[in-house]
Amino acid sequence: MKVAVLGARGRMGAEACRAVEAADGLDLVAGLDVDDQLADLRAAGAEVVIDFTHPDAVLDNLRFCIENGINAVVGTTGFTPERLDQVRGWLADAPKVGVLIAPNFSVGAVLMMRFAEQAARFFPSVEVIELHHPRKADAPSGTAARTAELISAARQQAGLGEVPDATTQEVAGARGARVADVPVHSVRLSGLVAHQEVLFGGEDETLTLRHDSMARTSFMPGVVLGARMVGERPGLTVGLEHYLDLD
Ligand SMILES: NC(=O)C1=CN([C@@H]2O[C@H](COP(=O)(O)OP(=O)(O)OC[C@H]3O[C@@H](n4cnc5c(N)ncnc54)[C@H](O)[C@@H]3O)[C@@H](O)[C@H]2O)C=CC1
Ligand SMILES: O=C(O)C1=N[C@H](C(=O)O)C[C@H](O)C1
Image 1: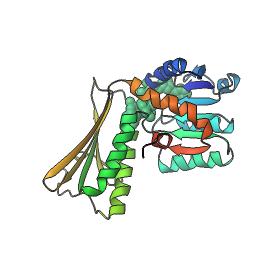
Image 2: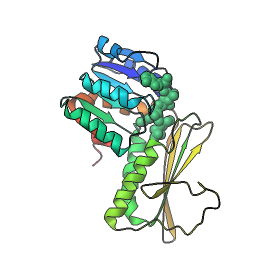
Image 3: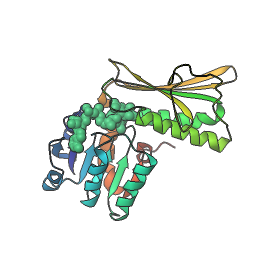
Image 4: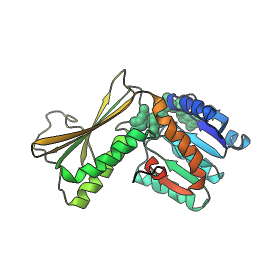
């Protein structure tokens, strides 16, 4: 299968190029970055594109892929519900194309999100803390936003009200940001790669879920799986969990 990587000179793109080159049955036909032309994807005959670029660039890239019949595996963050609807609209005119958008490709992070979703209904209090390297472009992380949305949906289904909090913020941001009504805190610290804690609190007990990516190789089994499977899954899939057998 002919695979191209967008963002090939970046931290994740470079790792993805190495992973594709090492994977049986995958052939790296192009590694493009910001100075290259998307038309090079066509010239290289790419069947699958892996995108690790920037939230400002990823939609144009995806549109090009979909309009040119190229399947896409997307790790780039910044996908709001509105942006996902845009992608669905383009895919409506290209019913054979598959797109996988995964906020996190590491199996441990996917499981953390699933466990958080399962735990959510049992605890009135919840906070998400994501911790990343200081060169990360965005906050909160895509993983934290997705985790908060999953928790929020589970809380609503269970009839839980607002997260209890009597604190008045003396300084704006002291209590983090609210994503789907869940408090989310973003830490940027040299030495870190990608980490997240989900803290739940109930009567006289707490539960902490923590995931750590120690290196970007942790994302690669998920990226390779995505590249292998995306052509068999037409339409939009959000989340690697749909390619894994978690149940
Ligand atoms: N889903 C996941 O598991 C993961 C997702 N990410 C996300 O991936 C994205 C990239 O992260 P990093 O690799 O750390 O960033 P980075 O800044 O190291 O790399 C991004 C690369 O994309 C290039 N680029 C920017 N615009 C481009 C365009 N229009 N066409 C081609 N190349 C372009 C840049 O020149 C740079 O080389 C971020 O959104 C990050 O949050 C990062 C790690 C894991
Ligand atoms: O920028 C990163 O590094 C990461 N980005 C993704 C995110 O925003 O969730 C995935 C992982 O946390 C690493």
